Image (tube, rainbow, N blue to C red; front, side):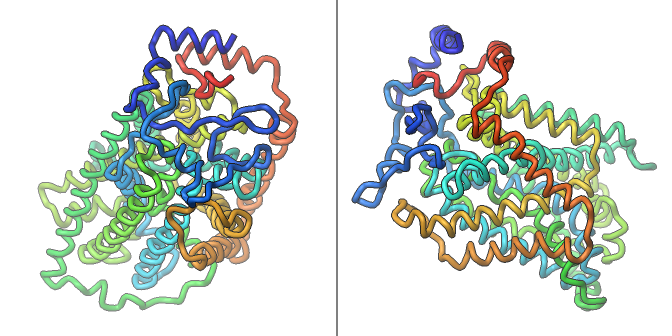
Length: 537
């Protein structure tokens, strides 16, 4: 019955017959595994045969993934519409969000020193760049969407990949979006409430409204989602430039007293440094988001590493100059006491134009949330296509070719977190759990250097880079547990391992409740979505 519905959609909307044109994009063609099921080319788990490369070194797999036109009988698929500029915008626009406006005071509290906090800002940028360069090698080896999920499938098999999709889909990506939308709402409401703190209920309502708006944009059109991302990224860079120019003017006037004794204060403990890294790395998070949409990048073997090499150093430079600008206008104590550092900065520097700062922050956070959801929906799409999540999450809209079910699913979880969470607790949980998987991706790269030495690698990093990032990842996970043991860390680990309860029956053994077919068909008709592998079934 599902095939009949799919054929009906294709006949009515002409979704399938136009796939022969050159401008429809590039899908990841399906392949038939040894057990007779279909999977996406580029996902080489333990349950399917490996694709061998040709003698030329370019690899038959790579050629098929990056061809210029679709094959005559391609099914409905995501199109390659993300170029170099959009790739940089996705990285920069996602990274520069609420973190630089929420995190500066947190770093000062945890380090107790301006100098140490500044070093950690730079170190976080360097660590993000090294990690992203390692991800560039992984992303050009396997151009399937899904980032860590696809790399774990290649290196370790389906079980670790499922655990990643389990945690990321239910916790990491939704919590990231919830944090950003709460920050957006906080700054947006403060612009209208000056004499008291904004009501919590109003802040959460505005955050929910932001989630709905971003969901609509990304479900309506990929081009519209990327246009919003490009425009908001350009706007936030203008806002960053305003802050930097204001700080430069204060420094020109001789306001350097807060920078002169930068290393005064007690030396922070190793655990405090690790938790300070969590706060700083939250501001840099998003450096791997482009890897989630690799199937939609034009010429990913070139544009993926180029976008990373342009985007992350640009963000690091902006963050360093913004922190200097803050300290040129206010003392470390004032930064710690201020709940909205950027707004306080604007009140002191911009005078009558101080309203530009809360506006800039809302623009920045909205763009960051848009990029976060854009990437998160592709993780659902990739994992569900392999059978690791519900089938409906791998379907795309029959006309708009957007992964609408995955986007809606992520938005619903993010909305629930907005209703019941706070920014501080979400940041700590997110950072601790995320770096477990970042370290796992580094280990996957190292393992595949030995298990898949002949894989085509259009971009290759020195082996020392993933080793260094892996060691730092282990430190960031272990140090806070040793320094300040908290029951939340145990809960996080138990939640990760708890995914095995669902993996064994539903993925490993292939058990499916009878009612799921009816649920899938209901949402397929409701949302007008079809499976991307329909023409191969």
